[in-house]
Length: 339
Ligand code: KG4
Ligand code: ZN
Image (cartoon, rainbow, N blue to C red; front, side):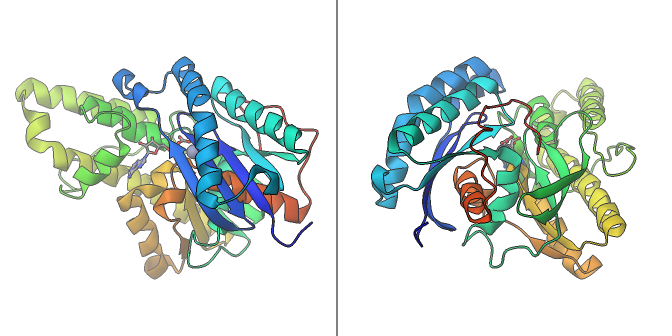
C-alpha cells in the first residue's frame, strides 16, 4: 500500500447524506446534506429519506472530491455505512459505494455506524489527543444510547444500552411537547443555558446496572405539562427556559450516574463521547467536570464529528485497512447490524 491512503467515506444511515475524503487519518473534506423535509412531520419519514439520499448522493460525493482536490482515480478505498440505520437509506449509500468501488477496482469497506461515532476520536484533528486503550465510549444519538468498552480499534463490548427510547429521543420527544420543532435537541440545549436547572424536578428512572431507560421520563414530562397547562394555559411560554434546563439537567444526571458506575466497575477512567447528543453543552460540561471530581480523562469530539458525518466512516475505513480487519465478503447492509 502506498504511504498515503486516500479514502472516500459515505454515510447515509438516517436523514443526512454525507461524504468525506481522508488522506490517512487527516480529513480533506467533510460534506453533509441534511433533509429539511422531515421537519414538517416531526420525525424522519423513511420513504422520504431514501428518496432524498438518491437525489443528494451524487452531488455530495462530487463536492467532497472537489473540496479535497482529489480525483476519483486517486482513491484507494471507499468506506460506507453498513448499518445500523434505516434500510432504504443504508441501501442508497451502500449501492453507490459498492458500484463506484467496483468501477474503480478498489475495495469497498463496510462500516458500523456506532463504531464510526466512537472511532471519530482517531481523526487527526478531532481532539487534542486520541484516547488510550482501553477506554469507555458513551455513544449517545437519536437512535442509540450505549456505554461501550473499547479495548482496541475493532474490539468493542457493549456494557449497557437503552432498554427503550434513545437519549436523543428523550430530547426530541420532550421538545415536541414544548413545540420546539424537530429535532429539538439543539434548541433544548440553547434554551437550557438560559434557564434554572433546578426549577422543576423529574423522577429519574430506576434501571439496574449500566442499562438506560428514557420512556418513563418522557411520560413524566407529558403529565407534568398537562397538569401545569390546565392551571395556566401559558405555562410553557412563561417557563420554557426553566423547563428545558430542568429536563436537560435530569438527562445529564442519568448519564453521569451510569458513567460513575461504569468507571467503578471496570476501573477504566478514560471516557470518550460520541453521537449527535454529545454536542450537548450540559453533557459536555458535566463529563469534563469528571476530570476534577473523579480523576477521569475525557475526550470530547469537535462539533463537526458529533452528529452524523462521513469523516467518521472514512477514519474507520482507514483503520480497517491499516489493521488488516476489512472483510470484503461481509458487505450486505443491515438495519440492526451488530458490532
Ligand atoms: O448522531 P445523530 O446525528 O444521528 C443519529 O444517529 O441518531 O444524532 C441526532 C440526535 C438528535 O436526536 C438531535 O436532537 C440530537 O442528536 N442532538 C442534540 C444536540 N445536537 C444534536 N441533543 C441535545 N443537545 C444538542 N446540542
Ligand atoms: Zn449517528
